[in-house]
Image 1 (cartoon, rainbow, N blue to C red):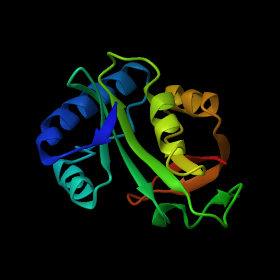
Image 2 (image 1 turned 135 degrees about the vertical axis):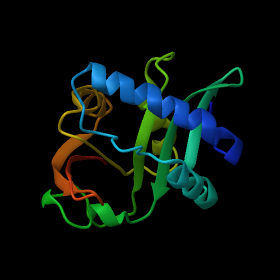
Image 3 (image 1 turned 90 degrees about the vertical axis):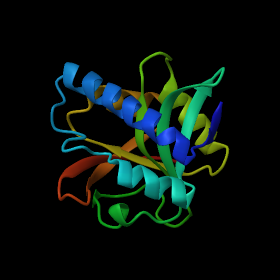
Length: 159
């Protein structure tokens, strides 16, 4: 089940991000989610904006992600081309799992698609598992965007 996260979910979300970070490192991705990212302050801002969600099973939270409907400033400039640059879209950001459930990205995409049938996402070049998952979920690679810290990310879209 997907539900909006509350402030009481932040500690668990940070633990999940630690688990996801360890998974990335074990797969050779030492460059994504560094220097304490995503931070507690960012998660608090996401909760305040109503944009942080958790997945739970029998009351146990096992995944977390941000979902934002509307223009994402990060996606204003792309080295490539969006498939559809004229209709509203939702963006999946910072999806992390504790590894206890499979199909987390697919479940998040299905949930988000039920809210808006135009989605975008991005990930680091080194995050091969996420790149494969996005492609399996029907996303198409559209080019490279630059995130707030100035580093490039592979951009994906599903329309």
